[in-house]
Amino acid sequence: MASATYRFSGPVEVPRVETRHRRIVTKIPVPESLEIFETLDRYESSAMHGQLPVVWDRAEGFQVHDPWGNTWIDFTSSIFVTNAGHGNPRIVEALREVLDRPLLHAYTYATRVRADYLRYLIASTPPQFEKAFLLSAGTEATECALKLMRTNGWKQGKRRPGILAFEGNWHGRTMGSQMISHNPEQKAWIGYQDPHIFHLPFPYPWREDAVRDPRAFFRTHMSELLQKEGLDPEKDLCGVMLETFQGWGALFYPPEFVQEAAAFARARGMLVAFDEMQAGFGRTGKLFGYMHYGVEPDLLCCGKGASSSLPLSIVLGSQRVMDLPEVGSMSSTHSANPASCAAGLANLRALIEEGMIENARVLGEVFHARLNEIRGRFPGHIRHVLGRGLVAGVHFADPNGKVDSVLASRVCEKALRKGLLLVHTGRESIKMGPPLVITEEGLMEGLEVFEESVAEGISEAGR
Image 1 (cartoon, rainbow, N blue to C red):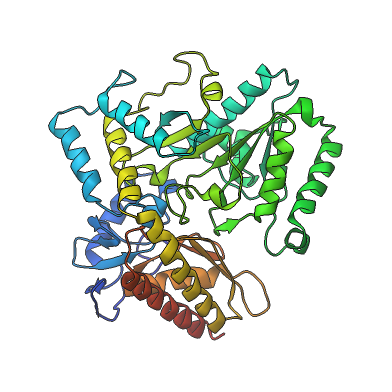
Image 2 (image 1 turned 180 degrees about the horizontal axis):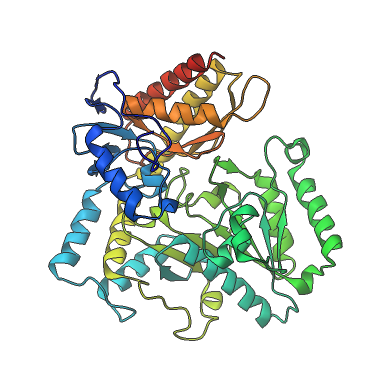
């Protein structure tokens, strides 16, 4: 291991790659890159580290370039941010206009670009979304939704600020967001758990009762929770927060499960909120991922692909709910930053006007068909191919059915050396999410590399 910044060995000699979309002409990791990793190791918290050992120098469309002549097909979208493509020309031009003005910051004072963006955003989204609150990070957005759900509950006369969430879901790294998230180890630092946040089991595809009857699965566990905690949902529950799909493995709920949860909430005066950080802005082949479920939320939390570039997150809701906090009580230093608003407006226009969402839908069918062919070739090692549109989670297991994180990491390393960037989750899954501008040719070339990498990873393990 050349540096603690990443887990992979290197630099090593790798076969030269020269295709239309990939170019690998050095050892991997690049020897000259080690100084950069060592500097980061020395001066930066190790909590920032753990990604594949690539130094990004330039990124355009669905390709990433380093300073030493290597080019990768990007199946990460910078971890699901660059939906409209790296360096999208509309976004670059919009940012150039802001820089040329110049207007780099305005706190919460009014700007034309902020008004233009909000007008277009509300006009382009479903009618229940009448107002928006702009922030910088996804965790801020989910914290905001938590506050709005509880504020709405208090206004309705609820006696407790109860929130329903789900096992395995992830909503951010700040305190409220981690409380709503489920992973007990990752929030142990807090020292206590909010007694009014409750987690229900997630309907994983390997849970037979959840697959057999998703509605009954929700009702059964909801009833058990109410009895165990002594809750009256009419008085003790204010809202429900759903991550549109579980990020680590592209795990969607059965639609019937979501419909049952939404119906339960609505009948009891609870708000329904979706965390769309990874699912929003065309990623799943629809403008928002929740649209696959046949429900309409009260609150929508968005980020990542909202700008395809600069920090921008959003909470969308009705005027009644969004105006519950007092004037000035939810502003943030970088809320509605003019550069972020310019990027957000250019991004949304590009996604809608250039057909990128439809491209995600059409290529998504090709994407998942090909991934399932690969699964069919390695049935003893690929347990599930999950996801929709241009997001997929490939789940690995050994021939005995035990989850196999080692093979997943090995496949990521193999692909890196061949010119393909995958999302290395560190567990038994590999995530894939190319920019929505990818061509079918580029998509198929990337999947060919993935298949080769799986075959080599299995072969080297002697399995």
